[in-house]
Image 1 (tube, helix red, strand yellow):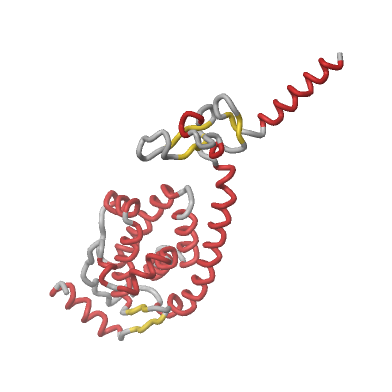
Image 2 (image 1 turned 120 degrees about the horizontal axis):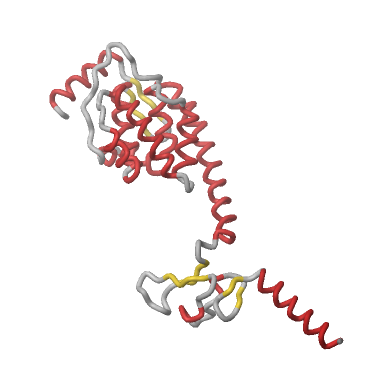
Length: 247
């Protein structure tokens, strides 16, 4: 009877330990990454799957089917939170120094400037840097200037959607907002084009949009958050000349 109880206890302990571990297919480990133990894909089975770019049984890594979200989640959330705090601090400064000064695109006496290409932001170092490192802030500025969305809703929505698993939703919303901005700048594109650009070239599209919005405002935004505003008449003359001469 003692032996029977001991055997039952051992089985329960093994079952409890197994439940807190992953099944590697013949043995158990704390995580799928520990399953191979130097033996490659042969020891990565059960709940885990071997991933290798070169299709090699030795060069690769073992990962839980569906992803080791439990172990990666805390790291992702902490990095997401830290980047969000940094972006928020910069957004507050940017709004004070830039957004509050540039105003919105005039609805009367407004001549649309020339249309720019998708890679136009590469010709302007300041805009390129802003969209590379602070794209949500630039997008919020564009929406505010075109009066299609407030700065804070646009900025927060872009950040949460772009740097989270909800990117597809952000693309759809961005497509609609971009159409509104284009109506104010005089460079309307069809929905499919905006959707594709938002999905695959969002930073470049936001940068191009920023240059067109700044041209309509007569604003030159440089690092770090420095703004120079032109006279309204001078701005409209330059926009008209640029549209005719394509410079």
